Length: 252
Length: 272
Image 1 (cartoon, rainbow over the protein chains, first blue to last red):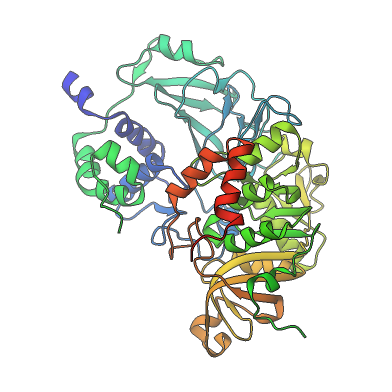
Image 2: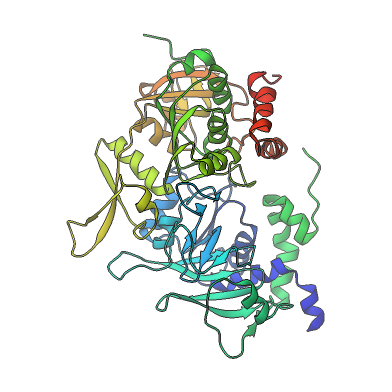
């Protein structure tokens, strides 16, 4: 077991978490520069005989939308997209995400790209998985400075979906929509609950005994490393080199 | 009537100071050669609308002082981070920024396309975008009880500007699967397009091409600009020049570095 833990790369662990979270989905849409969600979605597709559909914006073959940039949003508005991934410069304990600015909006201390489609997709996609590669009190805050998209809504506001989980390099939080709070679901091997507490700026719920994040099954790992890795490396060269040791071919 | 097919600078004469201009995101065919030409010309006071996000194009125009305002869902340089001149202008408060979300911009242009004054959109309620967008309104759905819904006003840009693979001499422009370019053109008063090449014949006579072709009655001017999206990707026809964008990110962290970039890559035409 100890050997197995050492053998599984952190990225592979995150892929497995996302793979479990998207179980049963019919259509998973993945934004740009999201190799871990893409890997998890392709893994589910391999194991699910071609389902879910997986839409990747940056690849001709994997971009299923042929009716312009609006089609993803229109399809999501109808409920045709089951899973999407979002992040935030700040994420707070109520599941609010901030992609805009830190400090006062009019004269911010730091400015980020912008809200993208979050203010819409967070409402209409049933399962939104939050991803944050920096787990710190700077990023996981008590209250975001700007709400690009709110974690929950009053009962009269139309809302099909929202956050179901927040995945970081330390742990997996589940989101409790009724309580509008995160609950610590599991801590990744090599990390501790104390470490999560020290580095998280918001309050969250946790069971008396917190589980360790389960590793991918050996067959899943083999499929990932032997079958999917080359395809992932073609789509995400830096990720392929770092995680699977696939060196990109010299510039064509 | 002026010729549709023109040299680049003559085509760009359609875009005058203080006009509103809508542009596509990196995957849609960004007219970068045209953008550099506009900066060389010293264009001023533009209101840039990005459908729905932008990268180097918006950041260059901001840094060059060509914009009065920007309406956008995001300005990020590929995957390398926030546009540095966009971030600098935001933190200094020197640029009017209308923050938006992607489907709201698509909806606002679709409203213009249909000639209706607004479009309803789900989501957004509870987002701070509503606090900074007084022009967006939440109303009660008139067809249901207790169902608040967002309305965004139609946007009719003066000009749509983009790059496409090819056009014919009549000004019909093939856009392929990038159909947001149709929406941009339909919604705008005028459309200016740069293309990789001109094809002989009439694209509308070939049914396999016609469905992906913007007809010339929307198009004011077409100019040939080879590798016109460089250093951005061009659909699946040309890859992004990541090394160049990394150099831009390094230089554009400071005002002085940005000036160096402009001198090197915009004011001195790059070698063909």
